[in-house]
Image (tube, rainbow, N blue to C red):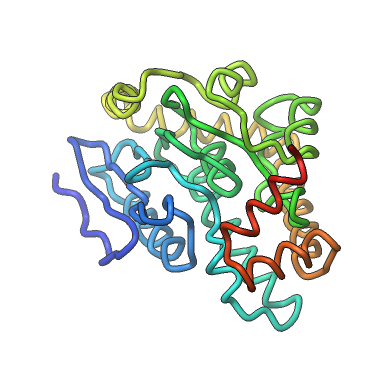
Length: 275
């Protein structure tokens, strides 16, 4: 059985190894930052992979030096947001982009390396299994520049105290060993072995009973639904829309520096305040 064709894409690639699809974020020049084009391309590709009976598991990775640095801040600066409805549409796109990996009927395995930050961190949490290369840096810096969390998955994956410490400090320097301790990732391996480890897990899942794997994932996710996962995530998304549509001194200053001096200068200002 041959895989179904994927729509033409500029910012992602899809390859196959047997029944495993390998989806790669392919904007290495910007550390695979997620812009709207990449998100739309990924949604279109995942719709095909989810429906394709030849695909039994999906590995997600990033090209170049990082899994991803998160949502593209330069693209965000260039985007015209006239009112709250514009923010609602943008945040909904980002939310759907992340949650498609949680909701996929196929097992999703993230292989993280380099940087896995902000929206990419949330996407990694949405995958069923995560393999991290040694040296990977994780975290969510949103509160440091006046924005919020698109998909509030962290409290569901780790405990509330650990989630609050990480999210309320905006810590984006969590190393792979701490991520493993917190239950954020499943395995930490040498960088050169990370992709092979992720593929080994995906291949094992792809050889199991397809119906059993699919229904067992659905059953596990149903436990979280019974605890109110979707309602909680939607409430957090509403908060994020309000945060982004509103303003704060930190958000204004970050935006001013970003617009006048560029993203690197804005990030340096943000980070200098916490040294």
